[in-house]
Amino acid sequence: MAKQSLAEKQPEAEKHLALKPPATAKWEGDVTKEIGELKAGPHALGQPLVAHPENLVRLDPKQPIWVDRKDKQVVLLGQVCTAGYPLEFFATYSNRSYEAVLSINAKPSIVHAGLLAVGATPGHPVRFQPKFVPPSGTAVAIEVRWKDSHGKVQSAPAQQWIRNIQTKKALESNWVFAGSILTHDEKTHQPLYLADSGELICVLNLPTAMLDLPIRSYAALESRLFEAFAEHLPPAGTPTTVVLKPILK
Image 1 (cartoon, one colour):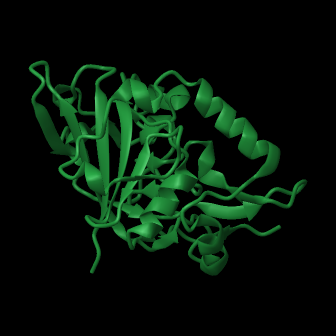
Image 2 (image 1 turned 180 degrees about the vertical axis):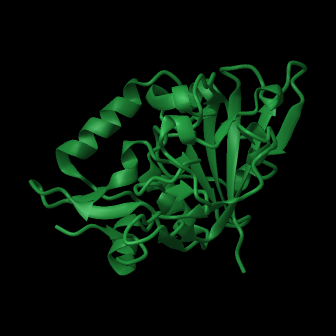
């Protein structure tokens, strides 16, 4: 079966993702079980650091994700990682976090649903054939918020937590809502959202990314562009609120 991006299959995507991720039978159960077994649940991370908590609507009872329709943003909770390699992700599941800045145990399909709910439009993931085409979609500004050792709330653009390996300068680009790929399980014929394997917020181009950078960013380990900006990061394990705010025209 040919795979389609959600932008190319938007009417069906909206039907399945209005505010609920697509069901994917046994595969869905496996991913949900895996997330449930990961260490940092939403209760361990505290409450989201937002100005208007009364606006938040939780999208899943067990996963740390909320939507704020009034302020048009999606709110996540995660933890700072100790990234020991050039980065693949800004944020992914905690069992893949050795190549990420943040671990966030929320399924990308639910985050996708939240972004739709606040007005973002998915474009398409990276394309490599017949020529390179960068990811597209609504630009999304990402802000991180955390409490310092004195309990004071700090905040920064997500770009300040990542730097170019060669220039040592912080990332300059916003992410775009690429939207991953919605296909079907060949055995169950149920919808299958490919980013649910962990491609939540990427910093190298992946054809299954939910959020990706609209620049050419190579996947090969020796060619990767970005690393954690260690001097800007709070200590590993720090609970972090991540605010995704689409830049709407």
